[in-house]
Image 1: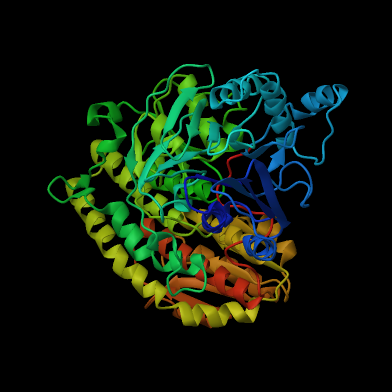
Image 2: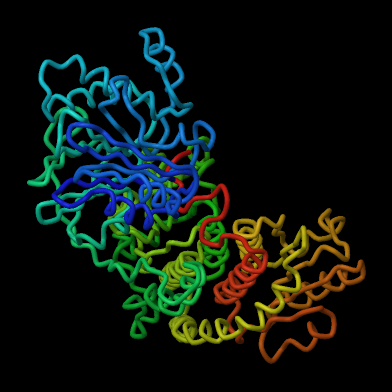
Length: 616
């Protein structure tokens, strides 16, 4: 949640900061602010609303200086107001600070500071941190970067919680300081200029050379260079990473929304998830990043898959895949619950954590709890330099490219593709024959062309979406591999259109859900021609008997029975049962997208949501 951009160099800071914030707006868009150092004064501009509102305010009331910090907010503590927008100041008004994360003990610290005479102008936890740093710095006899770092260490020693922060001080022109614990921060290296950002997409237009800060690290930046140390006062080693992302990768191209662009990128992202990982010779998947031999994988007797939101739904599909192909007992755990449960886990349990960003706070906490208990823990994520990628014992990189739209699309299908490869690998080690493995590989290789066919259905899906766009409630149902897709389809609709949508196993219809069926409540039933097709057909008949409209997703060439009963039918290419979730989920992504567009919703920036959830 929230986005940070900082700059120090010789150029005007404000345009660079605003452009960086625009790139990070998917991380939070309640309010935004900029602070720059200008002739020994910290100048600040803050606005409620989107980055464009801040840009317009600065155009009217310009802000100068070549050192600055900026922030786009997703509110945690305090309402969405200009006073609660970042940056925040210390007591002296000379220190400005922006912050991602949560200071959990801010209330007691604030009470203590108020007793000392400090006055606060916001309801945020961040302002408390600014006062703590400023108080410690004002005690210092020297006005040097080293003294400010010492003050920062003292302040951070008093706080509990998570932070990614950037600081400037009026007495230290040309100096920018950052620190992180639990909230990502990346340092960009330029020629005569340096950057801080919570995501590399904010600075990729200016530099490709970056250093990813680790937890408890502090960076001091100037136009001439940078130094790294730890909160404990030790030196910190670092490596410079060359970013392969381009500015074009984080743009919308000719698409009206990032979400639509990313839906259409799934032919490539699914292909890239499989690239170099299929072996016809051995009829299996090759996943060296797991860092486990076949002998070690064979000893695994139980698997736990953990994630949040869309990643959890992908994990649910993975549960069906692994149990079906590899016969290994598998279960899914919400990452947000994992570390608080006393989950019985035997020594031969393997844990996978799933996160597009690799920075999801709850998922990272699940990873650390699993490792703390001595379990081998692997990651499936999209950011090779993310905290989850660095802290896990191994894993699989998704290769999906940047996903900017808040509603996850290509990351879901990439995760499901990778879980299919994992299931294939484990199955071939255990019980799958060579011929079965070869058949699955052939089917996987045909998948990108089938995705292309689904994408060609967009005009048809859009027409259906418009007919149902003004529904107040929708039900989504599916069975077996497509039950998680029903959950995911409902989530997509909720996220971007604000329609109350609920996903269920189709057979649960009779156990309470049927009470919601009426002529104003459409049911979306995922019913490909698989082993449970006729069971799904019976459920559809039950809905129709009670006057409920039904939109069905069936199989091309085998949809006649559905067309006789349902109000609308969308037919996907004929595919094996284990791969239908990828195709059906794309149909539901397009469906949700066009409903949201019809309703005039802000598809890429849905209310109350942000892309990367880095706070609990």
